[in-house]
Picture 1: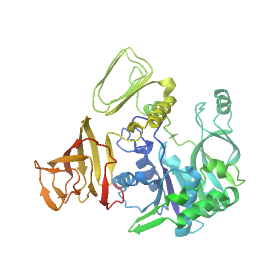
Picture 2 (picture 1 turned 180 degrees about the horizontal axis):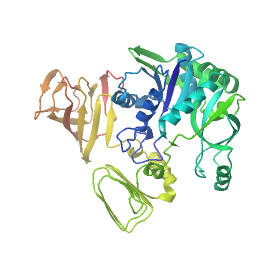
Picture 3 (picture 1 turned 180 degrees about the vertical axis):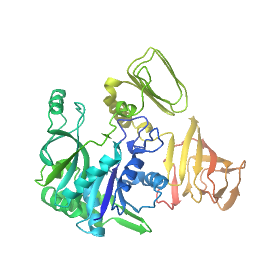
Length: 471
């Protein structure tokens, strides 16, 4: 039996703004133990028996960040593969692409365990037991979903009405009154969004219930780029043909239509961390019900969730608030309105404000950059380049750049010249000069970049050669 945990990693980052952003969505949020939700999903799948590899479906903009996350915790060197989407097309398309790849490599009988990258499961032994039951059902031709035993009248989840392992019906997110009725009944479970089935069965059911999605995904894969190495594979989906794939969830497209669906009821300490209230509740409260992280000073404060990034947050005379501090944005919201954070995110996106998409520190394949300060005609960045990595050979029309090396050593191409710049040395890049920054050493290269010019947007760049394809 071959088991392929398949992690779906994406999301808009709207409900946990300002920590989550479009290019730093919820799966990358680090919890108190230092691990991200994505890393926990990887380890959860890797710990199961008979696992051949971990397959991850994610946006191509998140690929290098995802790779870094896995490299940090993949001590056993488990094989990894990736399907990189140019944009989201919901879970049906993601699962169709994964199933087609798994079938091609392992055959129809290979088992897929579909996991969300942004869920938390506290009880690994109970999860492993639930997976064992699910694989047995899947090997009989069932499409298996995992149903969570409810412990509250949740209105933010879909429900499954079940009799043992038999699914009677799927239920949309209910009203509070209905949710209270479901909780009182022993027949209703939360729909976790996790699944188990063989590649052959899910493809057969998609051909029956959503043939347009399957056919369009097959056409896309035929036009997509595939690369493979030692313990690694990457399929980059063609954007033109992927644009033709219908946008639908696997629940609507298949699960609610199929007569082959089964459910495994389980109590595994599951949460989808769908709000700041849910994330805050992971921490132990103090005697006043406050849950804090970072540097805080509280007076006459009760039932608050407060996260400080790198500065002191002081409160007095407040109750039931969520206060989240990041370097470039602060969120203050009543706990009763925690789900309304997504509306702030939507307004930022509509205005084209970068705070919906990027943090002040931005991750790139070669390292990171952080905007330290900017004003009229200038911008100051801290740039960190990984050992052996390099930025693209590029040119700017409207800005010049002054680089000061803080630590490490830089190899700099500046026009027709190439030189090494050591710690405490600097170099100047005039506007219009082709240039490249590279770290030839074995330690991280850290430098301060001062940009000057009439226009300092990130789109003022002409790339001539780029080992990463884009950045």
